[in-house]
Each structure stands twice: as C-alpha cells, then as structure tokens.
Image (cartoon, rainbow, N blue to C red):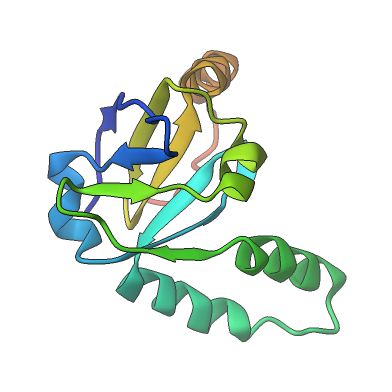
Length: 143
C-alpha cells in the first residue's frame, strides 16, 4: 500500500526518483497516466492492468465513460525505472500536470500521484477546510 508524501525534484531530462518506500509496491515497471485535478497517476504495471480491466467494462454508449477512457488511457506511458530508480515522465504528461522542478509524490493507496509542488500546496490548502468539516461519511463505516 502506497502511503506518505515525498518531495523529489524533476531533473533536466524529465526524470524523477521514485521514493524508496514506494519501490517495492510499484515493482519493476510502472504506468504513468493523466490523473484528475491535473496530477499524474503512477500505477505498478499489475495494478494498472487491474484498473484497465475494470474500466474496459464501462459502456461505450455512456459519454462520460468514453471521455474518461480517452483521457485516462490516451496519456498512459509504461516506464521502467533505471539503475538509479528514476522514471522518465514523458513531455506530454509533464505539460498536462504543469510539472516544474519541485514535485510532490504522494501515495494514495494502490497508486501514487505526482504533482507540481505549487499545485499540490494550492490543492491541499483549498481542500483542508472541506476535509476537516466533512459531515457525512464519504467512506461508509470508516469512522
């Protein structure tokens, strides 16, 4: 399970070092794709296959499903970490997420997210009050 937040840097070649505590969970290969809220999702190859199988079941007659599939899958890129545990973030995905040099990589259960550090800070700040004041159960039975 991927948990925690790390602040690596994007190098001049568009590579980022995967946080050590994520490496075992992400395995020998990853798939990076467009996430929601202008971040990137990073899945182990195995987890991406599980997610892909589930979303393939979405009816193509549903416009929202088609739109989601197009955005999610068209940006997907399989990457193998190099000997220094760096993965290359393709230019189109860097542009989509507006990645600068300073990044935030956060574990979100079964996947990780890569954010531009400023975008993450703005997201966290704008959602902190809502998170703190949630009145209904978002995940039934959790609390």
